[in-house]
Amino acid sequence: MAKESEINRREFLKSTTRGASLAALGSVSFIVHPERVFGANDRVRVAVVGLHGQGWAHVEEYAKLKDVEVVALCDVDENVLNQRLAEMAKLGLREPQTYVDMRRVLHDSSIDAISIATPNHWHSLQAIWGCQAGKDVYVEKPMSHNWWEGRQLVRAARQYSRIVQHGTNSRSGMAMREGMQKIREGLIGEVYMTRGLCFKWRKSIGKAPQEPVPAGVDYDLWTGPAPMKPFTRNRFHYNWHWIWDTGNGDFGNQGIHELDVARWGLGVKYPNKISALGGHFMFDDDQETPNTLNVAYEFVLPGGKRKMMVFEVRHWISNHEALIGDPNFGGGEVPVALGNVTAPAPGKQKGPQNTIGNIFYGSKGYMAMNGYDAYRTWLGEEQEPGPRAAADGNNWANFIDCVRSRKQEDLNAPIEEGHISCTLLHLGNVSYRLGRTLRFDPEKETVIGDEEANRMLRGTYRAPYVVPEKL
Image (cartoon, rainbow, N blue to C red; front, side, top):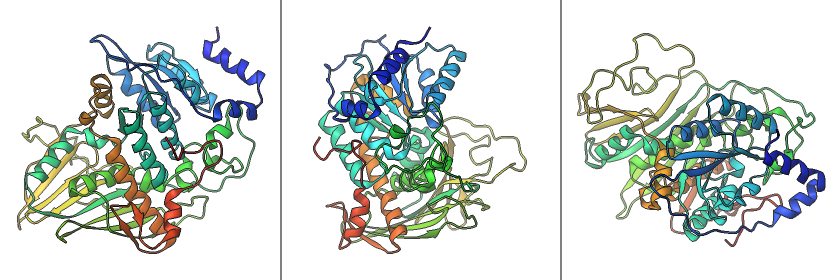
């Protein structure tokens, strides 16, 4: 028997043209229901939006939590929807409602929260819609495709008093949080510089010809706020990361995790100067974003003291630094505050040698984090091994805890912090694309004396998928 949502969708599509459907839904207004008070045994009802890649990880994470139920799935590709329904059945999970247009999800008063894992160009608009509809929101990194819409999302979260968590999972890692506390306590002295490392093996995406839109795909909805371009496989599933209209390169894909950790450890917010240099090396393909990139940030603190951050993206063969990427980085029978951890079996790591993490440099030593669940330190002129720990955490569990408690202050990755880190991302990409250093006013959140840069940070939208000026 077909599900109710499938019947409704078919009847809707039969009775309207695509243009009419957009006209019906394009002017977004939602009925906001009274705030739900959760009892001890009440389940948080979640809809996951965007299921091809990371969205399935959302489903799996929520399925582990006893007080959560995934009650709806939404994706513009019905092939992906059907695949995920089958996978949920194999896991023994209750069959959810399914939707193609997430605006229909937002009209469902029984849904408490939406969890967004769509392409980058959709993140802020969908999250803003969620806030307007009275839903709490988990939004994947980066929470914005440009600076302006990120600021609008922060405003929407505040205006509608919503719980909004950013998908920078490292913020919930137990070892990562302990490492940050060690930095604050002065373990490595005064931290004056940090480096974010995103050395991740990436093959060429080749060149993809134009072709008809695959059956079952609503390409207009997929394109959403971006300019409408002819369909190619390199503008679609996953490879959209490397196209400026929809992605932010590996800097905004894997790199935003490490950029966020780098800023967190350095203890800074917005930079005063940004300079980027890089390019798309080795390959002749459809990728528009750089696969090799160096971005330098300068921060001027009250009183004139300066700090520096450097971020590096590499796409091919690279070395490990500070043991980051080594299979034994978080291992060893080492008593630490978070418990004992056991090293993986010794031996050479097979496959691509990724190095993903951060290094913090201080007056008394340095700390390395692997970007996921471990840190190590080396202290003094002799670089003697210092405290270390390995333990992960759960960003989704923290989100659900805050949905139930309504305590925004308990979020590990609040959307305000996500916006600051994503602003650094966008400034770096704009500096790279314009080929010049940017000077930034942290108070006004604007580039000084460079209107072209400010226009790029503002972005553009294809109607009716427009981030609202007034919330």
